[in-house]
Length: 286
Image 1 (tube, rainbow, N blue to C red):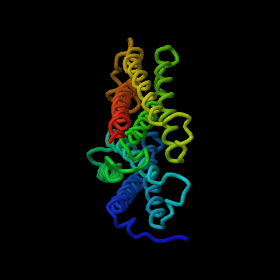
Image 2 (tube, helix red, strand yellow):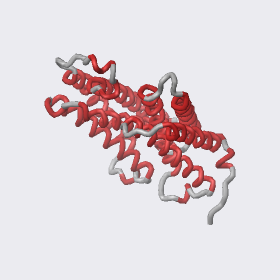
Image 3 (cartoon, rainbow, N blue to C red):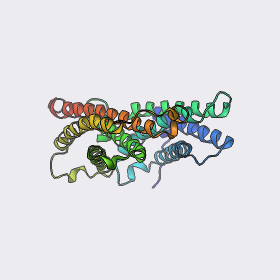
Image 4 (spheres, helix red, strand yellow):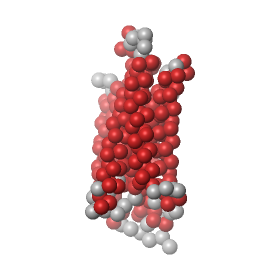
């Protein structure tokens, strides 16, 4: 039987989600009313705003009707993971849109970009509100290591998108880097899916120990990628002058993005390993 839960809309998290719906709606409405484009970056920004808007409306509706807890998934893990994903998507979409599409005379596009940044802040606030506090019993994705898994998977997706500008098949070193990105991404994605679908109990070994071992391996592999990727990517390949005029379509810039994101994921895995050690060997003893 469906029961109405008004607190889902009046609680701090509910109010933040309502504001998220409003600002993402304003963002894609302003852009759609001004211009349309087939550019991949424009498509990504519009997809981000529409996707975040639709899923947030769905979450509000499910919680208002008290249906979330009746689904055969970990609802709290799902909502926290989505808030983290939306935060990352909106941050990247806001930066891309501000860099590629806005201009001094484009008032509507500037307004849409501002609304997008506000939505990013709101989703970041939601992550802070739903994140598990020390001593709380919660799902894995509500903890810092769980949120970092979402970050690691998302950064890997950005890397994969930029790989189309790379001739990584020419060098075995670059192929190794792609293997590193793929293996770590698959592991992070499996962790997220298994957590949301409540399948962690099926692990043949203690999940926390497996997580630590995989994180250490990921750190070691990403350390090699941080060195190997820029060495082979920029070897005898200086930055072309055209990249200053068309930064969004410059292959050299995309290689630099991969290098930067590799460093970001290395830091994320190091922090993830630290928190995993802390949760298993220190907090579990208290």
